Amino acid sequence: QVQLVESGGGLVQAGGSLRLSCAASVRTFRTYAMGWFRQAPGKEREFVAAISWSGGSTYYADSVKGRFTISRDDAKNTVSLQMNSLKTDDTAVYYCAARNSTGVTTTIGSYLYWGQGTQVTVSS
Image (cartoon, rainbow, N blue to C red; front, side):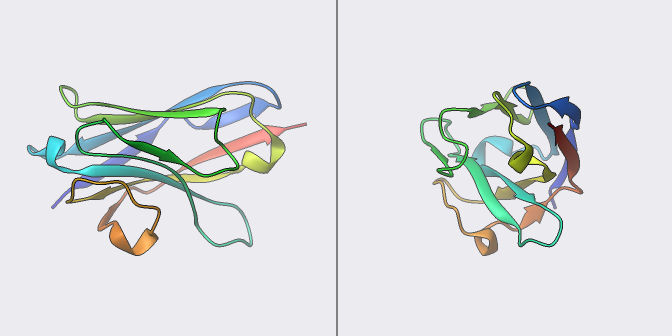
């Protein structure tokens, strides 16, 4: 069983930055590929970013490419999402997810473990 706890959400003005973190309670964290997803009110959950188990591969949604950066620290069992140049369209609940596999994927169903989510609100 993997437990994931997100932190770092909040209210920020458009153009600002936030850094989300996700702490995983599992001894074999380095064997999990990780992802970030988000869900805005009235919309389906969507892929944001993913990182492979080794950290050597990353993948981003087109909407965040060049603004968001995903990274992982296996020594601390954490994965982070640095969000810069935030837009009002980035407002959503952000979820951390884990899959017991090596590669990156955008498919929600491929992720077995999910955090509770953290709210990000970007004001104009």
